[in-house]
Image (tube, rainbow, N blue to C red; front, side, top):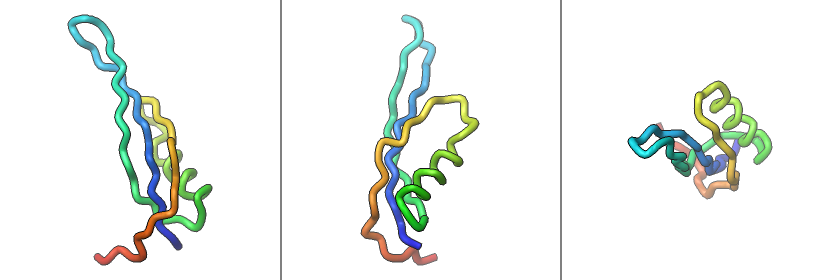
Length: 69
């Protein structure tokens, strides 16, 4: 297994006194997978069902070799 970094853009609607504002947030996740395709599929599966919209912006191989617990 290898590690991949996945950048996800979350889109959320926030109610303000002036109306609804769309807020975009980009977060980075570390995913353990065999390939870029598998890493993206794991991210999509994890985020499915949430009330906000999301988009996988990129998935790249990470230089992290091992996670010590």
